Picture: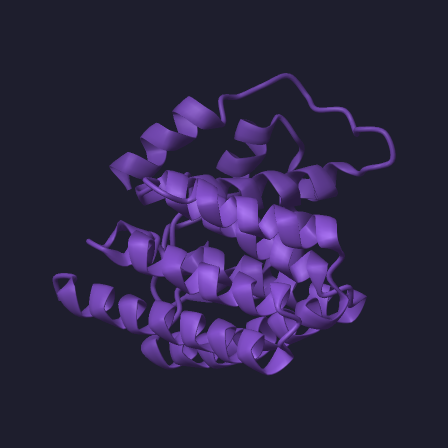
Length: 232
């Protein structure tokens, strides 16, 4: 909680009363800033959320903040936890397993469709992104990994799949630190990405899907190993 409070003071300083951005409501702004806080580590699973404090930090009345919280609850990013009240949601081991099962299926489908539909510029972008991964680690590798997967998803050219993967990416924010911080995992992920892109470039849908599924299965195994290494 001390780290949370410190981060809140540093990154979400009280500000004058906010005005809606063009075409966007205050509730939308509050929602976006909360999701960005999850991505940047200001908020982490299990942290308690106080509506009045959030409203003060965002420079908004409690009404748009309350609306944003309702939306976040409907999406599973915020929940009421026993004896703690409103908190950032926490996944149990079963939910993590379910998440990776769905992720493996969706990422595999995206890779197969990319092999069928990706344009030459998209393939070149994916190849360049694999090359740029060399030497990256920690949060830099994690951010690059997110960009790589977004590029892969867009190369599939399926708006409904893209929507499902976008929702999944929000859920992934609740898993905690990236597995790419584990020794050797960043290098392994780069090799896995290279196999996916090579299959896409060869227009081999079966191989692309198999490589993507293997990549997510390896990420799942790394997540389990990371959880097992954490103190009880």
